[in-house]
Each structure stands twice: as C-alpha cells, then as structure tokens.
Length: 321
Image (cartoon, rainbow, N blue to C red; front, side, top):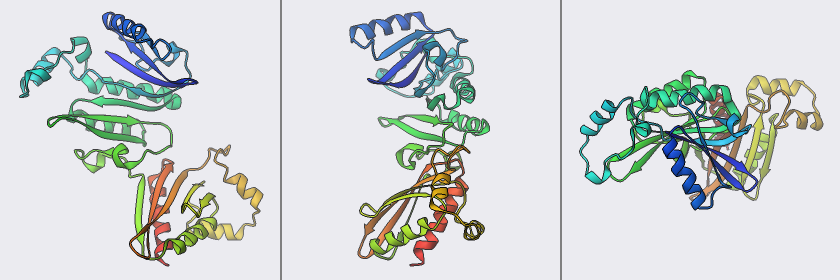
C-alpha cells in the first residue's frame, strides 16, 4: 500500500511517497530515475506499523497535503464477494495485488488511523485527504472526524464513466475554509448532515450597486473590526475578533473611548491572543436593472453560528435600503 504527501519547496511541489511493499518500491525508484524525477519525488519504504504520515522520517516539519488511495477491503473474501456482486466488463476487472487492496479493517480502519495520526500532527499538514471506495464508509469516516473534533472538512464525489463512483474526504485542523461549490460540499449523494456548513451565502438587493456599495462600506466601518474595501471592485475583506455587530457589542463600543491606533492593533490578523475568529470576503455584482447581488464568503474561523449571524446582520442592514 502506498501513501503520498506533498510538500512545497523552493522549486515547486515535492512528492513524498511511502510504501510497505519492497517490489512496489523497487519499481517506483526505477521509474523515478528513468523519468529524471529524483529532485521532485522522494520514495521511502516503511513497515506496516510505521506512521502513515511519516514526516519525521523525511526530516520535515510540515507538508501541504496528503493523497491516499487506501486498501478498500478487510480480507480477500471481502474483495471477492464485492467483485461477485458487480456486473461489469472484463476490462474493468481489478488487477491490484492483495497488499494494495486488503488491510485489516479495510478502508475504514486505514483512514481512521490517518485521523488518529492527524490529531497528533495537527497543522503540520494543512489538508489530509483520502479516497473512499465504499459509500457505506463515507458516513462512518465523517462521523469519526466529527468525533475527533474536526470542524473543517470537505467531501466530493469522484465519478468515472457511467457506473463507477468514489468519494474524496478531506479535513484540516486549520481555520481556513474551502469554497462550498465543487469542493467542500461537492457531492449529490450524501445527506446534508454529513456535509460541512456552507462557506458561502448570497442574497439580492433591489437597489443600485453604487448605493449598496456605500451602505456596505459604512456598515462594516462602523464595527470594531479590520476591514479593507475596494469600491472600484465592489469587494472587501474583513476580520473580526468576535460578534462585534450585536447590540451589546455596539453599545459597549459606544461607551468605551478608542483611538485609531488602538483599534488597528486590536484588529491585527496576527494578534497574540490568537487572531480573528472570523474572516470573510464580500463581493457585489450587478443583476438586472438597478439591483445588486451580495455574496459573502467565509474565509476563516471555526464558528458557523458566528458566520451565519454576520450574514444575517449584513442582510438586514442592506435590505433596509
């Protein structure tokens, strides 16, 4: 079985490959040399009990993401019974060796082991990803992620031809949110409770984009947060340390004298107290005649309720025009 980790170096991305099979590793090293990829691919043979994400063996502090196509089956009989239940042309028959297709506990145990390792490594890897071959495994893995405390994950359908379907699951311990469309919620086959909270919200305003743009900028500038707006692009990015738009927060701000220097320090994205708990991007677009579309993108944070509250406040303020 093979495991791939990707690290960004000064000359681009470097592929870090591990495999427990000696024959597979021999072929891999030969292919790397024949294709002059020694500077871009680093193979490492490991043992079954070694870490799957073996950063220390490569002498690395961190990597960008992992890629994994785990062994799907828990036993040879599991593999054979699954094959017997399918109707397919001979050209699509499985040609993988047992060591590539079978592992104790199957793909659920394998990816769950990845989750356990990620709990230790945390943000030493930005995104952990794996493919899953069985629909029944997806719900179990996502519930395992949620049970481990992961609140930032993504799931996507991988469709090949008319019949073959796989699923990709990714998770991160960082607070940067992926886009909803085609990435975080890139599936039509899973129930909503298995999908991450949408990282995008949009609504229409029945007023010109110029008026909406001015109201948007005035609304955010009045709040105690970091905000950069480009009127010519009708786009702004902001960071907040908490719910600074609530009635209680605004009353407290009015009662507490501040100056611009203190505010700029408080809103610093790299604050020593842990930085902002919400990052967002807002874009305005013309729709029809005299109307505007407001699109809010969740960039950073863990609290979906906070993001939803912010979107609700923004909608109320702009709808009041």
